[in-house]
Image (cartoon, rainbow, N blue to C red; front, side, top):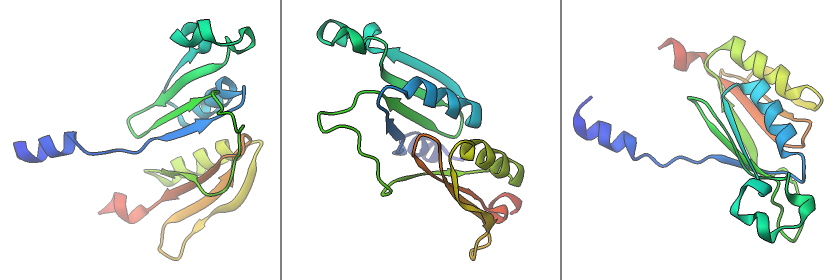
Length: 151
């Protein structure tokens, strides 16, 4: 790889998932860490500059958390806007896995306590694909394309 290619790849734009919870962010992110692995960090309202302006009952709420590994960054918070928390089905978290074992393991873990809406199966495009709603109400799509890892 030449120097120009390296510089361009360092500047790639990335999109990270940002999840909003209503008081159970810590519990959910710990669950995702158990399912996906990675390094997990939390900052509570009480540990942040917001502490002096927020009600005492919010001091233990999570203002920022991140779960990171070599493949993704998942960010979350308990900070719900004035309209309240509204979950819908317009956004899903897509997890591209690198092996059949990984996709099966992650699917089983994420579906635990949730709903397996589309069991893992070989799709019409040849990949192992499935969908679920986890116990926190978030939609996940899991995908493993053997052709990508064998060529």
